[in-house]
Length: 117
Image (cartoon, rainbow, N blue to C red):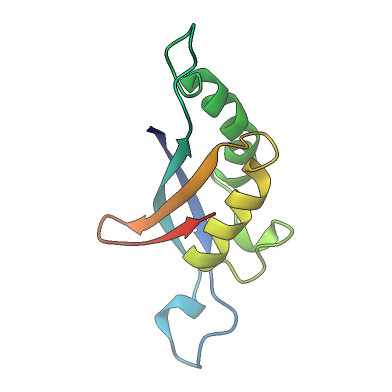
């Protein structure tokens, strides 16, 4: 069974490696949406895969680093494409949420990436 929890954060960034004149080379911001997906069996007593509060607790330190910050200033996100943001979130969460199977990062309502483990 899969369970998921969605979060949002607002951040600014620029992409330092794009071709000259590319609009994403300039500082700009997004309201990102992140979906954290876990998979596992139902707990025989609690009846859940994982308590949603556990997912929220695992996310809180990341939100503190990401929300209303310049992503380029965060170690590991010097070139903060949506793909790299998703991979960074995966690396941060996996030790706390071993049932993690997917991270989705939406940079806009119509554009995003998926990391699967």
